[in-house]
Image (cartoon, rainbow, N blue to C red; front, side, top):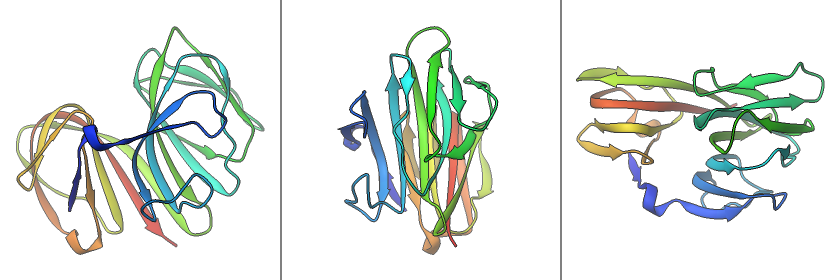
Length: 187
């Protein structure tokens, strides 16, 4: 298990130059926007506009802060995405644009290389101690709000715990927090 502190996340420009993203984790380590196998990041979106296109990539978006946005994904009906919405999965190579509902938002963006990896994203509420099994593969647990402790490792808002296959099994968790459970599996 590896703790990725919010203060250590890497800031970088969007692929299309329209904003800034905060990279939480990427594989292989040090990979760029053109050659990653998987990537987890957060972005602040302050204006309406197009998304960066990532050929051969599947993406899931979740709203972390703000009122949300309406996504226009080619070939699909418009989709309103808010903090209460389930994470939305779509092809990152489909032309996509967004209209903000009411002001700036921050989103969580999970991307995997199609045909090599798959992923899932879900919100988890923690309210007290429990035991959980995170599953196989690579698991990332992002603390969005509050504080949590997983197997003795303290997570504050913005921190992320990276759990690899060798750490599979049951884990003790406690605190009061909203987490995002991100599971990444090789095909």
